Length: 116
Image (cartoon, rainbow, N blue to C red; front, side, top):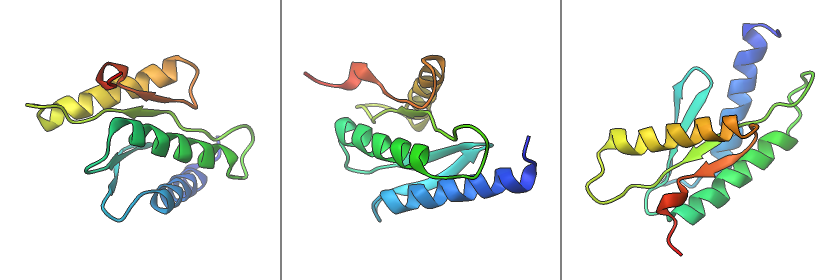
């Protein structure tokens, strides 16, 4: 709708917002297309959810000078004993699509990993 230049600018602005909110020990990368990945070492799942909400809200409130809303959906997972990298990514990706299916502009953690 807005062309590649505007789309690229929105992705750059999103990356800036992400960089402003993550710690120096976290790792940010563009996963592909319009997807980013943030790896947060030594972080409990509940802390990751708080970070995700902070990012989601900041992006929702940012003016991207486009018609309509610019929002993000976030899927979160946490490393478990005997996990391989692809397992963690798979769970996060499944939670991303769950967030999208629930109406977008949401943070969806892997609730099965949250201890009561």
